[in-house]
Length: 577
Image (cartoon, rainbow, N blue to C red):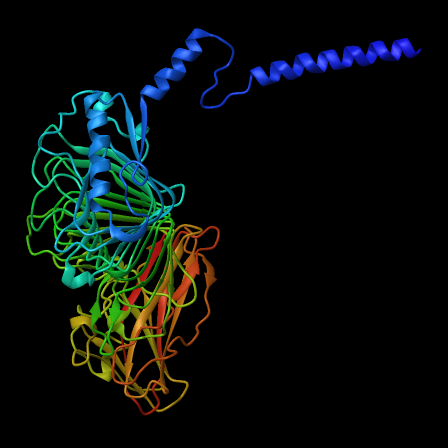
């Protein structure tokens, strides 16, 4: 029995020794290969030959404490990496490593998209560069032309600015306006033809306190992707092109995702034509303008994300800024197309889409969720888009207080009674406004007048001697609607005493056989109105068409007006899919 135990123990320790020895022989690190297979050794050696990592501190004596100027050290490191790539015909991948720390930059640094800079820990560039870019990434005149795929294609060669392991922060230490400084400039300043700045990516970058955060030049600059960038406190966060210049082989597929643009005059500004832009899950906050366009012809898409605190509305309701402002005078410029899909917005009430030339800005709003941050009722700030903007409305959801999309999408004919002649109170019943059925009760005066017309039109005047008095206009023409669609309706009121004058709106749904399906309540909606000016309700009447709906009409009621003047105009309704 003891012999048996001894033999079993001997076998156990023998097997353990063999397995332990084998497992040790299979350990892999940077200097050990599996077994003795010659092909594996060759593969490992080939990997070493085709990969270079240059440390700006260890190899070029850059100062990560921020005490000494590191400009020359960083430039020498980038030049060395670039030579390595070019001299090996692009078969080596050069990465310049920045250990965590602060690096002082006092003059411009020039880099290339095929030389990668990588942060190991948090890296902060403290720059003091006047009238130029602190970092300029561009092909140069003496660079080789990019005629083969391995030279042209940079996506799989890693982001050329890679902060994923800590992050890069660019901070301007000078006054952002007087220094006229740019953080990062992308692309050539002249046409180098076969040497594009293209097919590149960057990630995990923050930029603060520059006149321009990112500047994209308009020569051979295309196909780029940026992830997790944060540009805040720059006058212009991203700028495209040069003043009134046409792009040269540039602009397609500029892409930002999971990024933030905040605190400045503009998130994006176009000086040249072209430069299509895609934003996915991005936030734009506390800006005068999100998209500011001085030239036409481009396509902009905003998917998901968030828009908040855009533009300035002064006490006299003079407005500055907006989500998209197309400020051009050249009628030959092409139309800008802007799509906003699945985005939520928290905004003050005023025109967020504005264009200096009619029909040059076209917006599409789909699943656009809007919430107002104030209770301003002045009619001048009631519209999301001004009259020069083309609006393709789909889904617009209102949370709390709302805003009307645009007068251009109004389905109410003769909304400001411009098709009517001025009338007296005695003939309103026999001659109601064009397109409406009219009924009234306890009227002293009821007529169409032009003296106080809204938006260059006319108005219905109503004076009564009874708190139960009203004048009601019902649209004659049916408007089409489908079950599940949202109908928005509203109208404007002006009175010398808004406590004694009120407006109500009702939406009535019918089936295809003109049978009544549903009629909304008539509720007073003039909360917060002011005397002597045109007011729109802070929240329009919003109803979802019930099952079986095919048509709808709208009733507009001006009521009370006991001993005061009440005026109604700007009747509005539209359908959002």
